[in-house]
Image 1 (cartoon, helix red, strand yellow):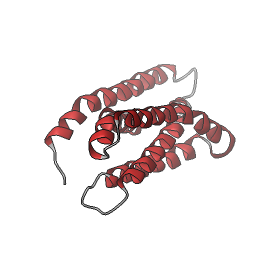
Image 2 (cartoon, one colour):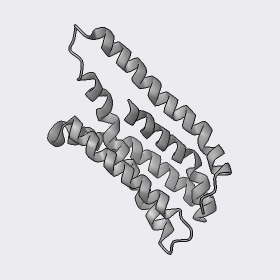
Image 3 (cartoon, rainbow, N blue to C red):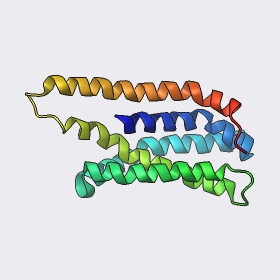
Image 4 (cartoon, rainbow, N blue to C red):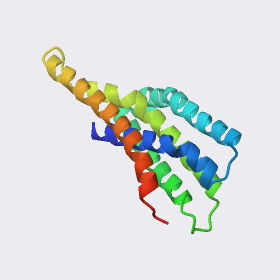
Length: 162
C-alpha cells in the first residue's frame, strides 16, 4: 500500500510539471514537448502488458514488483540528476532516459501490485479483510495522486535547490 501511494505520488507529481520542465528547462518547443509528454504517457499505459507477461511467464509477481520498483526509482534519480543545471551533463538525453525508465517501471508495477495484494488473502475465510485491503489500497492510490497534483506545483514554485 505504501509503495503504491509513493509510486502514484511520484508519477503524478512528475507528470503535473513535466510539460513545464520540457519547455522551460530543456527548451523544447511546445510541439516537441507535447510529443514527448504523450509518448511518455503512452509508454506508461503500454508497458503494463510487458510487465504482466514478464510476471506471469518468468519472474512472478513479487520479483517483478521488486525489480521494476528499483528500475522506477533509478529512473527518478536519473531524471532528478538530469535537471541539475550546474552539472556538465547532457540534460535532455538523461531526462529522456529517466522518463523511459520510469515508464518501464510503472509498467511492471501496475499489473502486479493489486493482484499480489489480493493473493495474500485466503477466500472465503478472509473475504472481509480482502474488501478492506482493496478499499485502503485504492484510497492510497487516489490519495497519492491527488496530494501530488496539489503539492507538486506549490513545491516547484516555493523550493529552489540549484
